Image (cartoon, rainbow, N blue to C red):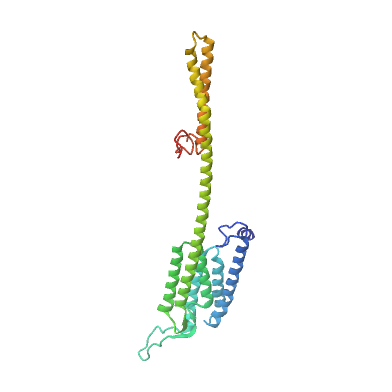
Amino acid sequence: MLRRLRTTLGESASPLSPPLSKYGWLRGLTYLVVGWIALFVALAGSDEMRAGYQLSVPEGLLAGFAQGIAVVLALWRPTTAWTLSLSATVVTALTARASLGPFPTTPTLALPPPAPAVGAGPGWPWSTPELVAHTAVLVLLALRLRTRTAVAALLASGLATYVLEGVIGARWFTPTGVASVALFAVAVLVGSALRGRREARIQLVEQATITAEERARRTLLEERSRIARELHDVVAHHMSVISIQAQVAPHLTENPSPELKENLVGIRQNALEALAELRRVLGVLRSENPEDPYGLGESGGRAAPQAPQPT
């Protein structure tokens, strides 16, 4: 755990780091804020479950600390945290329904079923700590995962809220379903917007890096092409003239000696070999991959070194 903490609080962000935490101090601040939120949710949730929902002490502690654990878990496993938060809320709401006066399951002919007393009881099915915890979990989930996944989590939370409040229902409660779903939608919207902004910034930095590298590579290729062009214009011209003169010289002399012919042939041969070596050097200079100018290795699909240069 200490090694993981040093990794997540290090100079460079890692997959274990919370979102939107480029610097080490910001990651530490994120952990501190999330920890305080989780502690508030756990303690306040336990008190409200016992006071408002008439749950026992173990049940209140279990419900409150389940939401607190979900908030902390959302930093690394947002999907698991969302599942834990929603499941704990559903179980708590169903458990607390007995203390809120559920509708009678067996209707009587003498007395009609009593109407629900909306606004006469505690907030249900989402209490205030549960609402805070689930909102924080949805924000972290939208920051981590794709927008489609965040919207699916929002729809599932809204469906569970509708089933609890609109289908199952209770008698004595203050409805919190509409406000909760609206707050969840805002949380998903904010998280998705921040995530999209972060991805756009990353893509912009990557594009700028690629552009700078391409500009540097193009500048290098242009400089090498200029050197190759100058070498060809200066050296290759003179070596070609030497080769032609060495070939023509025996015909300009009457009865040249064998030694003279042999020396002229050697001069011409050396000039041709020098031209061949110069051609290889020019191919290396004009190639995009100097280590494999003829495309014999991994870059075999490149153009030949003697191909026309761009522009």
